Figure 1 (cartoon, helix red, strand yellow):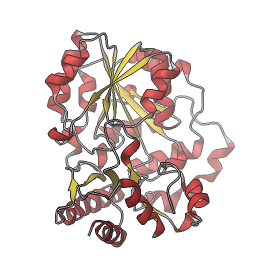
Figure 2 (figure 1 turned 90 degrees about the vertical axis):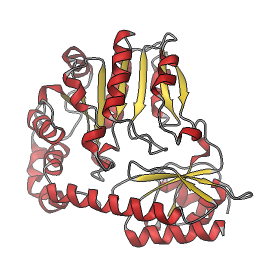
Figure 3 (figure 1 turned 180 degrees about the vertical axis):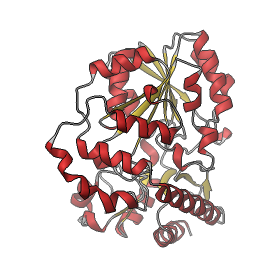
Amino acid sequence: MKPKEHFHGSDLEEIEQVYHIKKEDIISFSANVNPLGVSFRLRETLTNHIDAITSYPDREYTSLRKCIAEYADTDYRNVVVGNGSTELISLFIQIAHPKKALIVGPTYSEYEREVAMGGGRSHYFSLTEASEFMLDTASLTEELSRDVDLLILCNPNNPTSSVIRRGQMREILDYCKRRSITVLVDETYVEFSDEPEEVTAIPLTNYYNNIIILRGISKFFAAPGLRLGYAVCGSHDLLREINRRKNPWTINSLAAIAGEIMFTDEEYIATTRKLIAAERERVCERLAESPYLKAYRSNANFVLVKILKEGITSEKMFDEAIKRCLMIRDCSTFPFLNNQYFRFCFMLPEQNDRLLDVIFDVIK
């Protein structure tokens, strides 16, 4: 069995066809979704709100935005909601209409696609292996001086799991402010980090109007099918323009109610953070035992691993794992990475142990 292409974490139907494995039997270490499943409280109570679909949602989603603001510690007037963070990325790119965007990579490919669809050009600033894929601010600002009008950051970054802390983000914003550069920060994975309050840039929206921060519920709250995303921004002019352009009622009534329930489920939030923190430490310690693997410091719910043994590729690692119904991410298609790199997220302990057994079998 040979992989015929590189698969995204949501491509289970394609995996089913290529490998003749039932998608229900696959444990996806590629999707980076919370292994606990949906919010405990949501599972118990959402059906009580089924009658909500008989009426239109509030056009302003005021109650949902206030709930998000409480969760994210910001003013609800700085919050806009959308049909997943992808809708908000698209709307923002349409409005900003960048001629030249600088994307810090390797990272998620959707940013480049949206910029291109808007008629702009994307250039990459490379995070380097020598720096453990951590961002060098001085080197970045040198690149920003070259007619860039939009900077795109994923924080923590996918797939490197590296992080930019708030002090460093402030330096970047100061420089970008002087150069009239807007900064888009995707914080999809920030809630998984050890100290999210030290990483999130949301408090900076009180002082800077050249930053927009995107988040969603797909990963941390394990609800990609609900298609609920939100953005936080200090520029009310930009928020008004996003609201003006987006279609009304893009979030259905049940999704809006589900969001309010999830963001207040403190037991679920605490349990998730405890589980991910424990498994991140345990799994990375196991990986460090092998001289044939290099696991980079993880600041999210996934880890980037480099294969150091000659003759073993990420394609082979993917192939051997999927034979056992375990799906990892072959990272050879990411900019600046090659077929030595793969990524996987932290699942439940027994599932993680199954994957570790496969990894060690391949590189032994």
